[in-house]
Length: 421
Image (cartoon, rainbow, N blue to C red; front, side, top):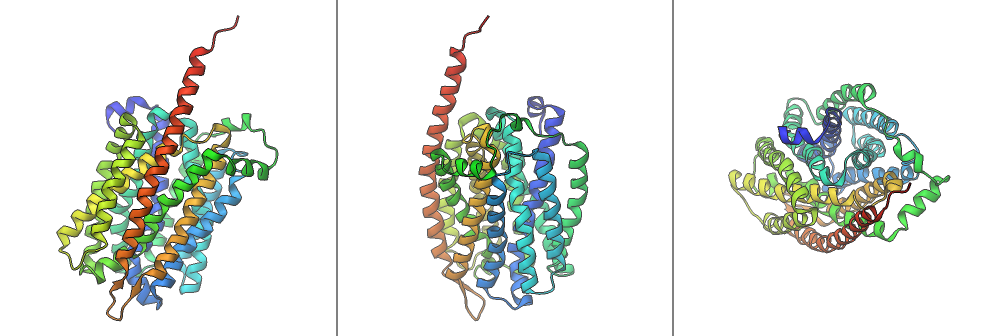
């Protein structure tokens, strides 16, 4: 964070941004590390791509169900207390993954981890929306979402390295152990986030949830989130297996691919956050989507590919994906009113997890592994993902237009207010 950005935020806000970024890093790494471990886990556990897809989707589906159940209560408690509760459960679930001896117990452990971990992101975004104005939210999201890239630069290479030293259990034990000091820091330094409690009027959690999911502007946002989740959950779980078996990349070269890709995404994250605040999230989202569509269609149709070319493809592709993540997050946080933020973020996270879990399971049915290990029908996934990206641009355009109308109306109302004596 440079000096200009530091002046935008107080020291406590800088601490909060760093804490939420590290928290996101842990949550994202726990999910992302599963994809590159697939090349090891499938033969060691004796499972096929469909079963591995179920391991990925189990986390997502349980996270989605948990988010829906918790959404009605999300605006009725101090957000710090909610964060501590779910983060503690996430750490416990990750430890269970590290000790799972077989496929059924691993599947159960992923369900436990998803129940708690899937809600943390929505709580974090609600905290950001409560404490940071829309004009600086792109920068905040740029740093928090940079955790996605950092998990590639630091987490995935280290995770793959320790899994090669021991086995696939080791990365989960590493993640859980690193989360314990962060839990203590949140308890010690983070202030309560409870301003929303003063305006809460719904006495029933079910009534509050029902009101949140029936608002038309919320439904459009949920539809966009559904399509946003499709791409990553369809392509990412089989990324390492596709690279090794179809593109001819050696297993030992996977950490280098994730390292270089992550460094590029980490550099671009704050820059994209600045561009989002300067030019608006919709323009950045459209540009990132156009880049992603082109590269996804090329990538999924590649044959045996030199390592340097695959690294270049991944770096540019994740640049587009990062632009979509940061700009869409900044825009969607402007959709709900303060009274609905916690519930909206919870439902939105659940929609993302559930649709992603279903997409992952469907991808596991579409993709087939031959006797030689190659994955078939991977190009078909590319066309599905590209189509969803295109439709999502149209949805986000309409959401952006509605948000701009709401912001203009609020500014007009403030200007028309006259002081009373």
